[in-house]
Structures are given as C-alpha cells and as structure tokens.
Image (cartoon, rainbow, N blue to C red; front, top):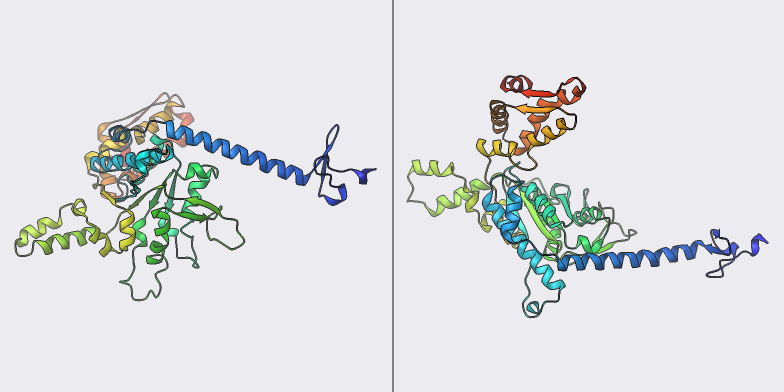
Amino acid sequence: MENSLKCNFCGRNKNDITFLISGINGHICNFCIEKTYSIIHKKFIIKNNHENKNKFTKEKIKKPKEIKSFLDKYVVGQNEAKKILSVAVYNHYKRIQKQWNNNKDFTNIEIEKSNVLLIGDTGTGKTLLAKSISKLLKVPFAIADATTLTEAGYVGEDVESILTKLLQSVNYDIESAEKGIIFLDEIDKISRKSNNPSITRDVSGEGVQQALLKILEGSIVNVPPQGGRKHPDQKMIQMNTENILFIAGGTFDGIEKIISDRIEDISIGFLTKERKIKNRKKNHIKSILSEDLRKFGLIPEIIGRFPIISYLNPLNKNILKKILIEPKNALIKQYQKLFDMDHISLNITDEALNVIVDKTFQLGLGARGLRIFCEKIFLDYMFDIENIQSTLNIDKNIVKKKLSY
C-alpha cells in the first residue's frame, strides 16, 4: 500500500522521488516543493524590485545644499570636498531617476556617470564622507579594499569581488545593489610599480587597474556570489554597473612632491631659492592634475573613469578638537551616551581634550588617532563600571597619566 503512494501534483510514484510529504487528503514530492518555492521566490523578488524601483523613482532627491548640510553633521571642515561630492552625487542620482522614469530628455543625450576620486591623508574623512552619503540617500553601500585585489590567476581576489560585497549588503537584491555606492579604499596601492626592476609582472598594480575598467565604466559583469576567486563550476550573478557610483579614496603618499616639481618646473627662473623652499611647505594637493596621477602610477584609462577629483586638507589641532566634540557621531558624545546608559554622567575638561588632540596631532593618524587615545583613557573605567558612582570627571592629569604623557 505504501509503495503505491504518489504525488498528487505531478503523479510521480514514491519509488521515483527522494521524499514525499503527506497531508490530510494528499501528498507532495520534493520536485514539486522545489518548483513551487522557485515560483513563489521569483514572484516575491520581482514584486520587491518593482516596489523598490517605484519608491526610488518617486522619492525626491536631495539638492546639493541639503546633501552638504547633512554631511556637515558628521564631517568637520573639508568644505570643498563636501561641495564637490554633493554636486556629483546629486547629478548621479538625478540621472538614474530620470532614466527610470523614461524621461524624454534622455532620448537624444546620454549623460555618463561621474565616479569620484578623493585624495587625502589617513584619517581626514574619506570613508566617512562616503558612508554619510549612503546614509542620507538610503542606498546600498559597501567598502572594498583595493590592496586585496590581484590580476586574474594570482593569489588574492578578483576585481568582481568588490561587487559581491555590495550584493551581500542587500541580501542579494540585484536591482537595489545596481543603484548603490561602492567606496574603493586604498586605490593608490594599485598604482604601477614600474620603478621596481625585480617585479616581472605587476599582478597587483597595472593588471588590477586594467581589470577594474569594465566595472567602473558601466557594463554587465559576472559576479561570484561568495567573492574571492571565480571558478568554472560556480554559478555567477549578472550585475549591471552602469548606475553604481564608485567613490575611490587614497592617501597617494608622495604625490605632493610630483605636484611641487611640476609647479617648480613651470616657474623655473622666476623663483628665488627662499621662495622655492616656502613653496615646498605649501599644501599642493589642491593643485592636483590628471598628469600628476599618471606620473604617480595610475593608467590614463583609470584616471578617465574618475572625472571628478577632490582633495581633503590635512587636519590641524583646531579641526581635530571639533571632530572630537561637535559632530553627531563625535567620540566624546558617544562615550557620554555609553556611560549614560549606566546612569553615569561623564564630564571631561577642556584642558583634557587639548591633551588628547596634541597626542593625536603628533601621531599623524588624523581622526583615527582620536579613537586610539580615547580607548586608552576610558577602557579601565568601562571595565570597572559597576564601581563608578553617578559622575565620572576626567581632567588633564588623568589623561596625561592614562596616556603616559
């Protein structure tokens, strides 16, 4: 009797299937379960994508001034970079929205996307700017490290793996990912290493730059679902990168000398020795040109994929102090909130803040250095939190002792 059981949907006999699930008045086999799941899952994704698309096309895009005003809450200073980034992001998402609405203005004119290159010292706010933009626009966001990428066939990750991170951030919702933002960090580390004669093949330099071109310009790319290396048996996910905004960042250590040499070459014969020395002390990043990036080691094609280039100024002590106490995500505000959760009021003197800023400035790590020293100061108090009364007062002497000044 049991062997005569069959699926009421497809009619397969129990002996021809892996398993059969019995209900009150019928049975269903594993093949029909998989088929049903596939249909429901596909309809669910289409419905979701349609809803997301409608939401995005109807949503009012923030104007550049609104974007900059939002960035001001999280990033102190860097007004020129915030202004450039606000305009670039506004134009990018305005372009996408008009395309999705099948706007007639786009029938004869094709507006290309404008990826952004941010240049500045470590800790000046490159990553924070990109994160803040994605938070405002409520679009998918992923950070990829260019130093892990190598040319296909070598140890490391394929360039397509940077798209995997974006897909994973939205649980593989392809349509959402295709209008996201990718922050490509340490892009200066994939510059050409032609100055080193011992390298026979530049597998993590020019080779990676060539591989990135297709992704940056906008095309259909086969993405490995789990990242890493692609292999023939792996099922790929196709993604269109046309509307993905790439924001790349790097310190470009040594590029100031390239810029300085170019400026001096132009001014040769007109500058005295004293003025040349004074010139070298200036912040030359603001005078950066495409030819400086080419001399640094970026190939012309890559430079062309980043038409918008902005720089971030080095942080002085005044800016560092503002970063410590003013933004919505200021470190001191964060620690005050953490202590407040345990009903403890944290008070820190202005002199104590100055000590933290001085140590950070000496370290030369920008805003990242602030966190290093704050962790050192507050770690023991956090660990011993049950023994702290209602108020914790931090003064200059405590900070000096904690930091072994």
